[in-house]
Image (cartoon, rainbow, N blue to C red; front, side, top):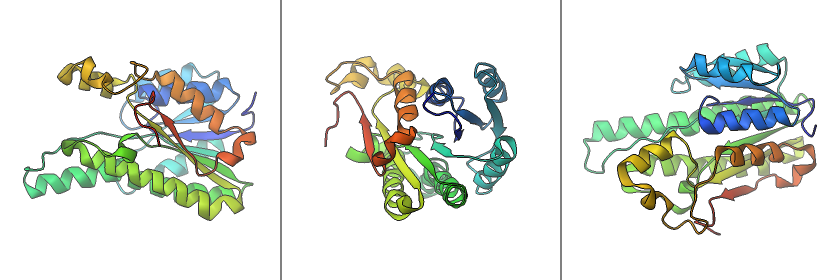
Length: 250
């Protein structure tokens, strides 16, 4: 059990990727705190599958007070934490010709959920980890944060690019304290977000430019996250792991 003794908070855990991450972590021996925003039933159902090694905790990460409330509840449930997965995220669209008020509202909401909540949770995690023997943060970024994104969803790409930079800054600044960080940058993953895109634009459009001609499965992402938490992988500190089928290569 590579992750025995670890206690890891996973945000946005009721979506397909979050569920896969939680399952992979527990399969490798970790205990997990399952965060959910509104879908309590899904969180409780997930916990039931996790071998008695999980707790579920609600929090609204679109509110500035959400991250602190979540962290407090997670510590109360688990006692201590050794890891954080900033997985919660949304993808909104707003046209470049939209009224300024709408434009600013969408950007502010996207950055709050996708980036600023991760910033606040990372601050809390760093403080906790360096006082408790170290820990690791895994940030769920995106291919969109590396190569740019469509005009209508620039906020999503920008938030993921910021998350990548946050990962590197934590790695550079706090690695010497035993606090390490890694980012994953998936392309299309077979989730509700992907299915919504396919429904509007077709699967051919989604698969265009992916040499292996398929999306990643959520289970692939879960397995990579679990691998990144292995104590033996400290040298991944600061890495951005591309999971995109070869659709973007650096």
